[in-house]
Amino acid sequence: MGFSAASLPRIIGHRGAARHAPENTLAGFRTAKQLGAAWVEFDVRLSADGRCILLHDDTIDRTTDGSGMAAEMTLETLAAFDAGSWFDKHFAGETIPTLEEAIDLLSELGLGANVEIKPHPGAAVETAEAVCHVLATSWPSALPPPLLSSFTYEALETAQRVAPDFARGMLTARIKEDWRERADAVGAATIHCDHTHLNASRARAVRAAGYPLLAYTVNHAGRAQELFGWGVSAVFSDAPDETARAV
Image (tube, helix red, strand yellow):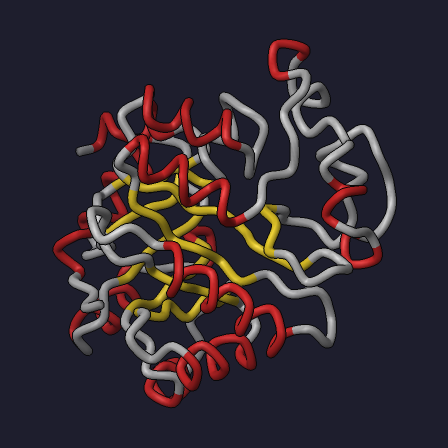
């Protein structure tokens, strides 16, 4: 399952289209598609019973009508919470999706994806293994191969070991001096960083080393245009419609 940087669009919907729809939901993916996104990014972690679910935080407090640690709840429990009303009453009834449900919708919509492995503390290995298993068994051949990423280095190491054919993106807030060594150690195909900590010289150094560089979270077309001028390959955006004006 070969990854090609050429398959990356300039604009990737962040957590779906987080300015316009509740993040990490199926409604968010549909909205991203309506806004013209070709790819979306989303976060995956584990429930108490080992199911892959789409959720950014360790807890469900911010993005549902429930509260508590997601890792301490079964999928059945998690699925009963409303993951849309906090954003807007129009999205009432949205649930926390499973990775399998997300993949089914991505296939239906024709959306590519950057899947961020977001383990709760101490669960990097099991989360990466579970995500890779679902992707290996469920990802449709009609879509571009997924790009895996993580801030958790152990998750990238695990993905490299159990699913070496999946491309890996090394996520870091700042591109530090040892970035190349760390990227090489996990066979990273891409480098992902916070655009607010990025400068032109560091961006050009990453590109000169042969790595596509992806920046998050960019919600203004002018900033996206500046980053593209530095050689940034793609940006993650909560507002892919707004940011696409830079393309």
